[in-house]
Image 1 (cartoon, helix red, strand yellow):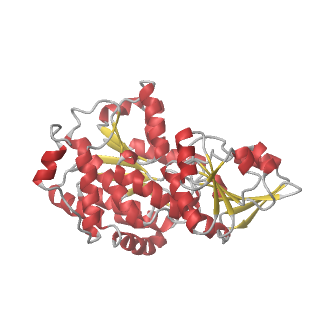
Image 2 (cartoon, one colour):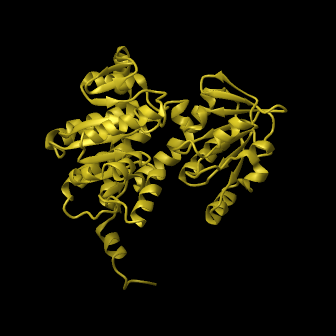
Image 3 (cartoon, helix red, strand yellow):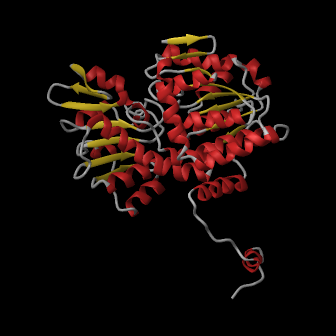
Length: 420
């Protein structure tokens, strides 16, 4: 471990490789680089302290450098014990960014690092999963005076924030970046779909074609995983608790059934619900010998890993990112310790899709600074015009042109008098 006053990372000697990976990500994140160019000129975040708890990946590093270009001072830690890319963490430390993060963090270190971010006294928080916001509200309420707002990256975090808002426990405004159309319709769908299968394949080298793949949850993420699994030649089953989503899955051509039925026939079972104990001891007993489990939800609670360990006679690390659980009459396999498989066993979402997501984060920080005196202590969405601008930046970076309305069309859409 390499540690200093403003960093704690696995190995600083990895910094050169981290820089190469960051440069590679930048070459595929054109829309975010356009935001960086403007930020470098206008300095909308000048003098602001931004504390971040995000997956420390090459794409996140591009966001960090964008915020720094905008004038911000940044401190960052990870938001999941297995998601940090150690070479990227080393590169950020070498750049002088305050960073505490390494892949395989203990729970003690995880929360120690979050408290290092809190000690930085951020004026803006950027969170992925709400652990930073939650820790501030539970144990450091006196610091809320300094905070003008926050941003949340993922569905699970938004769920927690809305629960806080409902309980009147949220004491500063937070932008739900995950609710941007340019985030959840792309990052969640295309990003999670591809990176989830990437993680499972890296951990197992399994063939998806011909396999029965069970997907628990049919939100934007689940839809993406189902789509990619189907594209790889799998027979897809969806389990859901929401009747509309279950109906949508059926209409999209997938079999829909309860997990109590699906668990017995699944070759690969993927949870992506954001809820707790989607796979339990009852399901483990039903599973076939050799079944593979993976979680693509934010926290490691969707699969009852503790219960699985108690049922097992022996647990073996058979490959990097793959554990074998010997239940006596059969063996079950778990990817990434039940943590989010796309980052525990792979590199997370492709840079292209993270570009629009992180445009949302950067522009949300700017929005908070500009509107700090008018935002209530609640969960907010970015205005549609900012979301649209992100899409325009991305299209422009891809060299794609698109139509615009004529004045006649604009008038027609705003006039209720003209009909048949």
